[in-house]
Length: 286
Ligand SMILES: [Zn+2]
Image (cartoon, protein in one colour):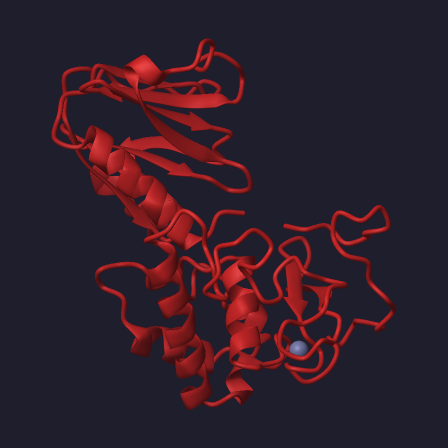
């Protein structure tokens, strides 16, 4: 699932291709939803809010999209378009301007709203970890008062927007914190360290195609624990484990090292886990 840095990069790509020039093509393919006639109008800007993308068009129109699990926005020069690329049910939105075309595929959400009404879609979000108005003090104070497991709180976009399962797991590993510890028992200093660490990781991520928390962008070396269950911890050699965190149906996978992070998850029976992709893998990866 794309995290805040990936979404930020997608919005920046769309902004570079579309902003400040009139739209030559604008289409959404999402059930009955339709777009007002915006051909000839300029894109004012495309911005990310947490994991949401807001495409603001002259005349007070905003196209809101969310990548959810598999969504992408591809931007390509008109003459580099692959045959048939604009066909198929995976294509949900198309915008063209000044020789470029942006193709939204498998988007998880797509809405058209008045720009003045954007808050109805993104108003619930907490401080954006990659936003211009990022304030670690607010995020720290909110998290420090939350009784839920820290690994669950960091994923809650109402608390802090932009972190997904990968940066959640990696941040807690780097700070040696058990993901299931109650956030309100960790103390403000520790929470502040966690928040700052996550912020640093995402700030680095937004500059690069391949996110890394280890500093290496070589395939298979990019992360410490995320999606590495059954493999050796890079720090101590103990097998990395995976367990679900949060309440169903919002529960998500959490990868962690029981040695570096202080024990097993409360509902992890410790039985051997096979690496992901292995035939006996039992846990979904999302
Ligand atoms: Zn370890």
